Length: 92
Image (tube, rainbow, N blue to C red; front, side, top):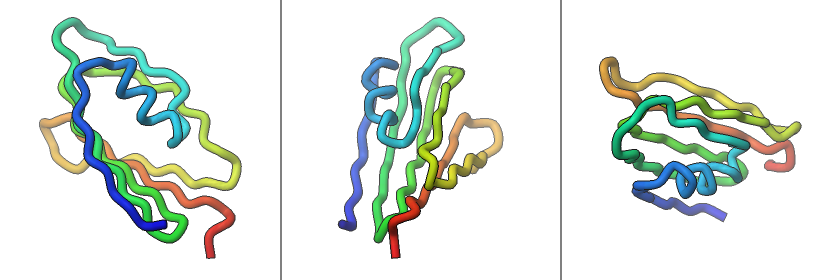
């Protein structure tokens, strides 16, 4: 079912929980300071797209589900921003 969601996070644990459906198994923030992240998710006919804007550097531990493809790319130089998309094997 098509849908979208936009979320803002001040805690790394909440951010990790929101990304767990996309295969993120763990998240380790690698610097001090206030954690802030913005997550936008879009779902269309078996396709899932997530884009993230983050303030703190971090390491993510990802376990991609078997029938999915996972992509990461940088959208803006100088700012930490990443996007990921996946498609399940059951979509038509």
